[in-house]
Image (cartoon, rainbow, N blue to C red; front, side):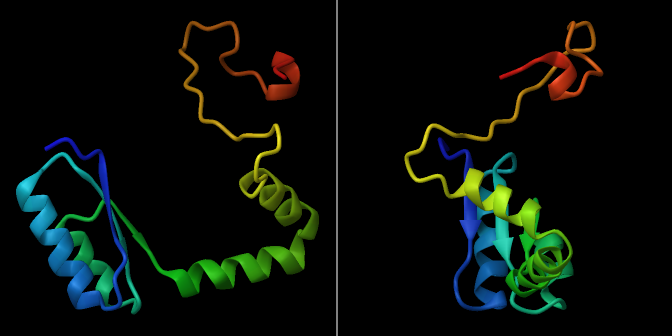
Length: 112
């Protein structure tokens, strides 16, 4: 009832599908992220009610491709994500349509 989200990431696609289906039945508004080992499980997890489905091998493949093409970008992202106590944090900020910052880049907005 109080949970904001659920991560279904146990060892098998069948178990993750069952967990997702059960959680969705208990709480229709719950945000559910589920792991799929096989691509074939993605549709089943979607039908079971997962909001996001993660394929770890696909993520690994994309990361390797990005590292080959844009190593500096990957290094920057790693620095932000894995800052471990440094004074750095990446945040999501919603900017309203009427804000003076609407439509500006971070540089143009002079945000620090």
